[in-house]
Length: 394
Image (tube, rainbow, N blue to C red; front, side):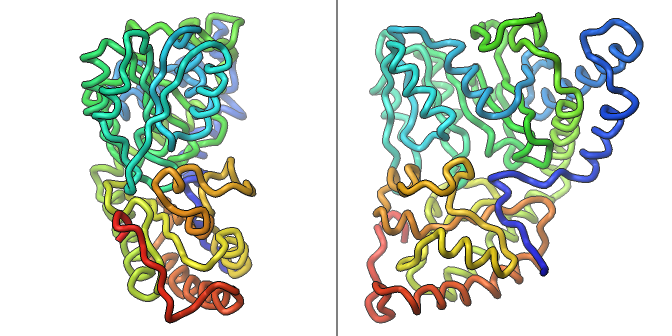
């Protein structure tokens, strides 16, 4: 069966160039980067080269890069590394659960947390951040790009607010890195999280940017790896793969491949809107990552649509992979004002560098077939009774 993969916000396939960069680390250059013999120094050189590649992607000093196991660890290190009982934290209602559940735990430990709302486009109002500031505010954590909708937050403005208030600013850029330019100097953040497998690197590897002078307490205790910020033997193949993926991502901003990806996304999205009734793009009124489209289909259960498309060879999702199978509707979409039914009927299409125009046409052939079939058996679907969309989604 011909298969097309449109769930790249969950994970991306490893690019061949990334795999080739990693290959020697499994076979010939396998040393421990903390060892002083030849193999160890080979490994150390590879780790530091990757650190430079990631630093170039984020426009920071190599020494400000801390390698982690991925986005969840990076978010945890940022939040638990800085917050203490009695501190106040500002975040949003649409954060990834790596941030939200960390904040819930910090509340149990004696912190207070303000969860800011978003508008119908999925945007946090920077003025809400200003109003939420308190004398005891320690940290603002607002994501760069949302994993379900691709909506981009005003992180530069938030960075200015944090600087004026002398408050730490962390942004989860897991879904932004490799898709849009990420410049920590322009943003003005103190900490920023990325994960390799979201931009065609290996799973289980990520990095946390930690601005010089910011001193989070480590989550792990052991050796003095990563300048005592993250104990544990470095994941050499993963780190090398992250570095190579970062290098390829930088090239993509200059060679037009990111613009081509946006064109493919727009072709998919616009054709669905033109040819299927009772649909809406969630977050369509805001700036988004170039690869992501979240579309609600009225009178359809999203999980049923995911299964039906999968049986025909198209892989999509209803939202965050770590929440797949959840009974509750997406916390992101309900925070944007969607009803529970409309949120449950929303599908995320997320493209990657490997996708082609032919993949989009394949999807456009299948989607109307599946929608029509599911609506035929829907007890609530009435072709003549089009339910009105919220004004923010029109």
